Image 1 (spheres, rainbow, N blue to C red):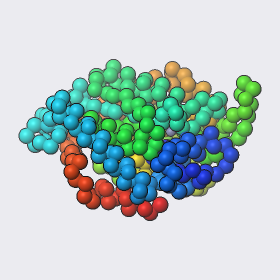
Image 2: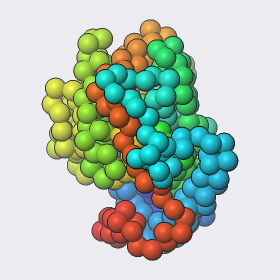
Image 3: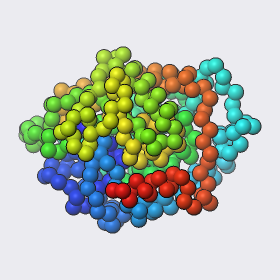
Image 4: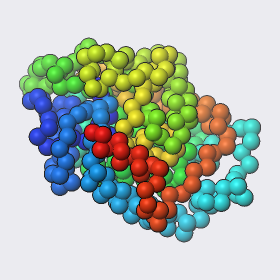
Length: 353
Ligand SMILES: [Zn+2]
């Protein structure tokens, strides 16, 4: 399910249930050890859960993001990279008409979670981060092999919530054309059952299988995000995979999501930080359920990773061809410390929680 953990934060003491090391609760429980969280108190969420950013935290994150952007801007300007997209788009935009220039199209493949805060735990006790890293590496290589040589594997050591902002900031700094966050699903803790595997107690749920794709209406390029999500769902299904419909079920409670595309399996999840703060089309892919005992075995196989890697590469090809002209997004200047549109939106959303 979901733990798009990524975007959501919880406060210490807000967790419920005893299987914290399982789902989102686990991930967030670990995240809560950070000093920032000591000031936050909020409930909610899981992978595709909710966001908990109170103003104090958000403001702190904003300052951190601004610092990151300053550093990235200096580095990029110094290296002379993407000059056409750093503020003078009209004069220097590349004449990409009629076809996709794969060598110039940059995809950021974000490895969800960190080694220290690894996300969900599989039915056999393997951290989600392990699955994410293996699949992310496979996807990045598939993209390079397909000619998208600027594809970047994004690995972040910083724990959430700063780590989440950092992911988006790094993608923004790289002027990426597309952001794909790679995750593996779990289910709400209350749906987990217990079993013994190799002499150890583990938790599982065999109720749901399949991938899920999330996009945020708060992303700077909502239409692009949805378009790529549709392409990705189509390519996954062309390879025999299916999406999980369980995010639409009442049993998901606050984690229910609006199914935007019932054919491709694209859900709406506005609050995900990595999606809303990225200024390029962005999706989060839950590649499958690692708490499902059968699907975990499949997800751990080279064959399944190769299948997903090929699907992503094909979807990126489709997307690049459909959008030959890179979207020009103004650089966020560090000096614009005033209450800009996005800043105001984030704060209002955060305070609403
Ligand atoms: Zn995750």
